[in-house]
Image 1: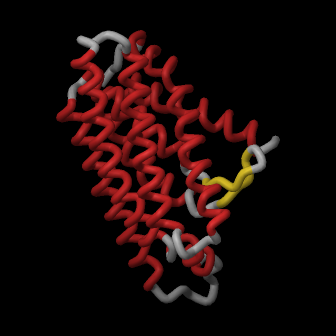
Image 2: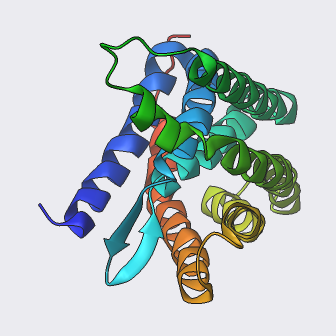
Length: 224
């Protein structure tokens, strides 16, 4: 399976997962999505792949589902609960990073085979996490604010507009902050601009694709 097809399948699967979590667990399920996505996307982002002839990092799909989850929270539960999800993701990413750094300090036994692999991935995590936290809290708070701004301006109409207008601007903010902090000095300028472009481009695509998914939430009666 090509990277491009796999990426598309991954996107649909991830957005569907958010709907399933919302259906089964309601607000709590969306909180869980935000926490999971905040941690996993920062692990995936250290892997570079080729998509449509461009260098890109993984993690964009899972991170974009963060915005989808907080938009659902904003729509049905309000600004306070959406912000609570943002702070939950922020806090748990800090904890996960700290625990993995602690795990690397343990001296491995002679039978261990994972230390060097873990070190290769998680030794980058503090810088990635700092970049992600800075971008995350700035972009997510803007997203929550913008979603409600457009909801008030349109008097609750045009869900597609507030979903896209808030997310697309927020993800541009996120992409610029994250890519700059995470990769300046680590990659050459060509790769840097390619990563910045693809990071935003692929998040933009997910934002467009998640529009029919957010309309599907109107058909869901969450159990939680």
